[in-house]
Structures are given as structure tokens and as C-alpha cells.
Length: 214
Image (tube, rainbow, N blue to C red; front, side, top):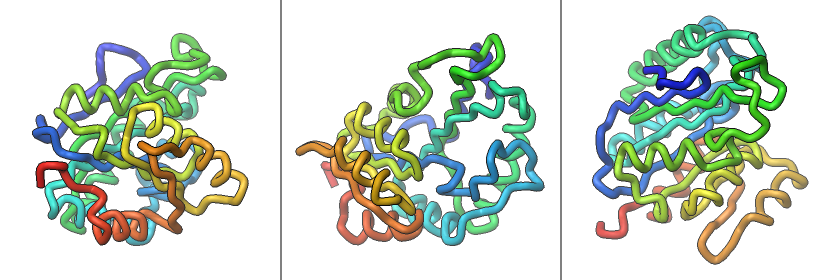
């Protein structure tokens, strides 16, 4: 569903996580290949192992929440109908692997966008934590035990600002990893992994993505 805001999208499939930890995922470069402004379903390409990694989380009742910046909408390269079509194709790919997303949140605002989507820094646009906070409020997520996996420093920044337990930066260069690790603290861990499947495997193997009451 499109929110009562021209630049925001919030689709909640699971009404509540009952104060469980969640896994927040960026989309492009993490779940699907980053083709630069993905607005057509025929251009969607799944990242290897991504669907099975999400299915592993589903099987463990770990809510999986997609949080994605969509500046292509603000720039006029595609619209929300294009985004909806891509998401429908993504959902079909996941379903074929026995996987699903519990929520999808997107922010189209960008400093170089067209009006009315031109905003220098919208609260929902990563590295701001607005999408994560909105998911928490809608789904009763325990942020302090939750993790984020992304392929840019802004993804890690959003996780740190939201008070998550940690974040994985995928396929990171030494420079981007240094920048991300500068956000680490006693309460926020920053790690590197080659892909989503590897990051999820480590989180599950090390029991880092479980509700504190479990």
C-alpha cells in the first residue's frame, strides 16, 4: 500500500513480531542485483542464495523487513507502479523458494529529486532510521536485538542510528568498511560478509539473531 505521502511506501504483511528481533535488509545489491534504478520486473535478477537465506529466517520465525531507498522515483526514472511491479516479481521469486518478506518500506525522497519529492534529508531516507522506526512501531520489533544487512555505508548508518545490535556490510571495499566500522560501539557491531547468505548463516550459527527471552 502507498502511504498518505507521495514519497513513502509501507507494506506490512505480519502485523506483529511480538517484541522479537528482526532482520532488516536493503534490497538492491543484497536481495536482488543492483541494476541502477530498478523499475521494471523484467530487469530483476535475484542474488545467489538470497531467497534461501530469507527462507531460513522465515523458518525460524525471524521477521524479515525490507528497507530501501528509491531515489529513481524522485528522479522520474520510474514511479510507484513500477516499484509495485518489481516487488510483485520479487515476491514471486521468493515464494518459489518457500520464502517471504514480512514487511516492505521504501523512501523515494532525494535531494536531487523532482518536486514534490525533492528533500535534502528525509527522516525515512537511509542513513536516517525512519523506516526502521516505522517498522518497529507497526510490528512490535525489538530493535536492540535486531540486525541490518546492506551493501552501502548508509545501510549501516541507519542501523546504528536506530539502535540495532549490529550490521553486515556486503562485498565491502577496505575504505567503505573503515567508514562503517567507525560507527561501531559497545552496543553496535559492524561485520563484513560476501553476500546475504553468508551473513545470515553467521548470524544463525552464532545465535545472534534471537529474541532475548528465547
